[in-house]
Length: 324
Ligand code: 13P
Ligand code: SF4
Image (cartoon, rainbow, N blue to C red; front, side, top):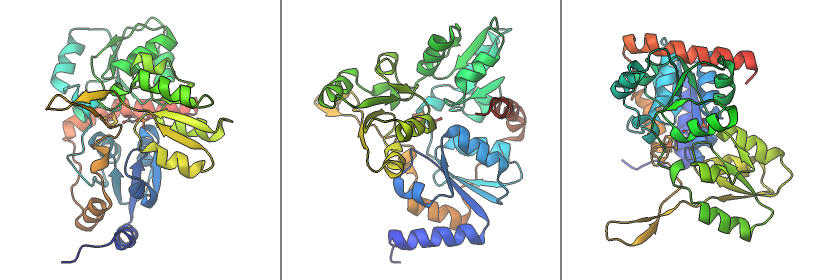
């Protein structure tokens, strides 16, 4: 059988979505062509908010697995599909639910705040979920003397501690993409582009965050880049966001921040990539197959979903109240 061209795939995807009353949602890190065909693109918070209010029969979540799980937990009566079930997240994987539950048990009386980049099972032992769009405000909404466990991202946790003055107890997790941006290479870029502003996602390490003109979630960085008077930006987050930045501000220049060099197996220096290989597993072809076959379906065991929905709903309620 002849494989379909990209134009044919796009036409089929739109036709199937309409026929099946499916909404296609995509995160800013997936391939640009997938973002362009989606009904809705957003950061993790916006995707959860959108899933919670959609009236479509099927949600196709073009992102990583925890994003599909969040949609499935919020919409137990809908079919939630992901184009590739293997598209996981190194940060979510850095926090196995059993070990996290044991850590929580060792600290009775602590309020457990978990980043949305966690599995459903980890969310099930959480009091309130946060994303990088609302972490600061949600932590600040807790009484000042509340002892808090924050997991799994140590970099985001350190950043929130630094801006709120809290002393949250941190789980030792990280995102392999955000943890490897290079301070030296960003400084070199700044020297070559003196007018450029530096945009940094808070999953990056502290020394990279210190270089930032703006720290924020993908949506916050995008908003800043569009509104700010600067015409050049060095972007320290997954490079998929550059697609929407360039679309929304075509007259501006966006430079992806370089990651540290790494050694390959032969011991030679090679440049690591600032792409998330999990997000990039979502392709037009897989999106088409997933709509056609209505597979793979994201399922969350009922006992876990019943517990995990509480901290997710708490996040959505606080965010709504605060207008985030
Ligand atoms: P956002 O919440 O900013 O969309 O980030 C999600 C993510 O996976 C960051 O690596
Ligand atoms: Fe997870 Fe990092 Fe990929 Fe985001 S960029 S989905 S945190 S592995």
